Image (cartoon, rainbow over all chains, first blue to last red; front, side, top):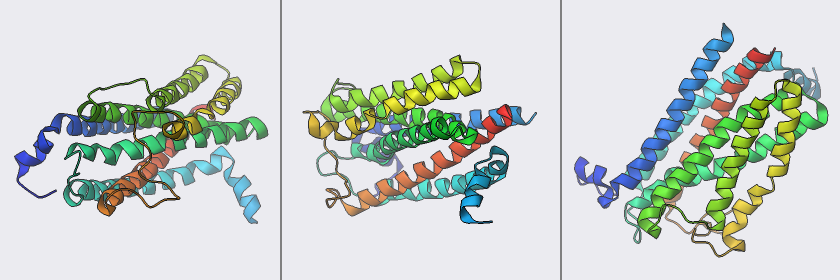
Length: 46
Length: 234
């Protein structure tokens, strides 16, 4: 996309809710999986 | 040691354990790098779509996640079948280790699809063949995990789960071909092995980078989880 500043970037042509809603939930899912894997790994080692 | 012997050597959970750790670390680093590159291409290089505007940028996670959801199921069913046929402990452990990551990518595909569907189709959800069969895939993953969790004896749990995983594999071609077999609201494939892709090359590059990132992430997560399972069981 042509760069028009951060506010335009976050707005995503008025569809920011859908775009960032997708990316935020995906990131949260992966972060949670990594967190639970780390915890399980620590517990398995003790 | 011959090549065949070496494979049997790594089929033992104890010898596989340190190797899995090394592969997991390398894959995790590769996934982070490729995801950074993929997001850069996806947001700063790929052009605005002529029809959809900016909202199409959901594609960079939606399509790779959907590919992974199907691919991981086939790999899970393969290891489950190997465990069932040859009673190799590590095979069944691999199947169990893949299921949560597969379920996660299935959920991500459905979630991003819903958020993409609303602005482009006017609805978050529709009971068309593609969406419904992908939802069934999520239930197959969750059913596999629930079934294994419900049986105390690990070997019986592995066998029961394997039967479910193998039967459920028929759903994967149904998902893939659903857009051809039925009249779906979901569009057909933009990328296939037999035709030139019907999208801008920078869009395709971003999507393939993200697909590789998710693939490496899945390897890292699965091997990290199989290490936990090996420690818990042996």
